[in-house]
Length: 148
Image 1 (cartoon, rainbow, N blue to C red):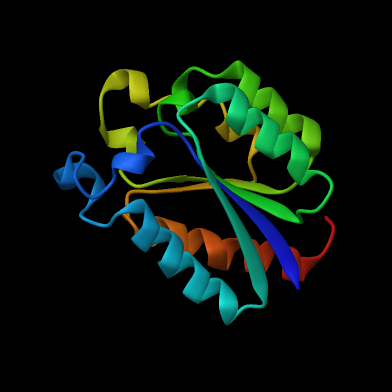
Image 2 (spheres, rainbow, N blue to C red):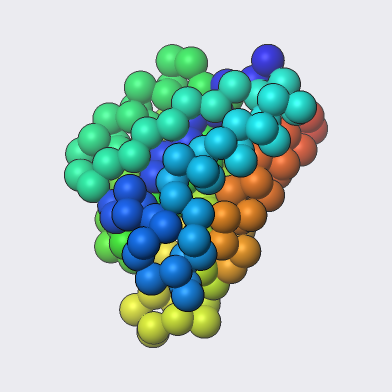
């Protein structure tokens, strides 16, 4: 069984009510459930963390080094600003997939740049809640390939 840390960044606890035209109508709990259902069929165990605090997200990534095989992360607003989060991802050296509910490349100019993308294996964005389901499938594919 593969173990995967799922990291949800700031303000994602407000999903379902926050700008549904951009982020969809699913709550964070519903997204976690969708991911869990997908993961179950792929023999993947997910552990979820959400925080509005950068340090808590970094701590969760550091702790993953002892048990996780991969990370799925939506850094949310930290995508565009957090060198510390980028460095945490790089430091643990676990394959990491960056996820976004909206297509960040088609939004405001400041959202087009991701500080964290360069240390991630890939990025999935623009499919609202389904972006996360795609990330679970991508992790399965990555881990099935074995070490690169």
